[in-house]
Image (cartoon, rainbow, N blue to C red; front, top):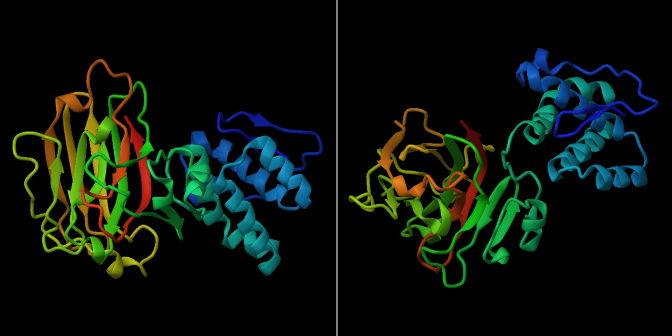
Length: 313
């Protein structure tokens, strides 16, 4: 088996035989420098699927495959047994390859593996939760119920921040069901939920606001469209099940947040620039963290998150 660790080092154990695999470059999936690493790791998974069950379990434990790579293996077994190798190789390769790409090439959290409660923290160790029983991952969506005693100091961290960067951009899709219609909710950045980005899915104009800042940012703003609630989006495809938040934070203290409608391309994105020098202090070596926020009211209902990603500059 040929394999590539996340460091990109290629190892070729004895018994390696070349296999016919499409090139990543021919599919246009990755820039050249990461092709070799991802192609080798994909080849590893492709050949590993022919091994026995005990061999696979031992390999998973020794190589510490991510939950996403285990999911790829499961799909390889299912599709290969149903359609045969050739159909699987040429029809499903781009999709499976993209899953492996997300493991090797970036820090995305696509929530491909279902889990509940403590199982969410075990499957996605990046997540830090106050009350794990309020979390569930189902069908590619992270579902959050309000904490007991939910308030503006209760949130769950998805990313701890990055060292030695000048700017960082977080993206995530967010919505909520009708039972949380009148609650400002969304996400946050910074320790102790220093800055919170809140809106109201299903409410005309969205009533968006930035909490934790001075100079009037805490007032509600009309974003120019009505962000759809979960009941409207639950049957959409992955990537279209929540208003997309794009939050760019810069070490110079000048930041921005953009909200985009998930299904209506004619809706004009809403962008708000803001200054918050204290959000990213000069004494801090790590960029502000990112987390999810179910609002400052306990109540019922759920908040839904998908397609979380991080881009460093």
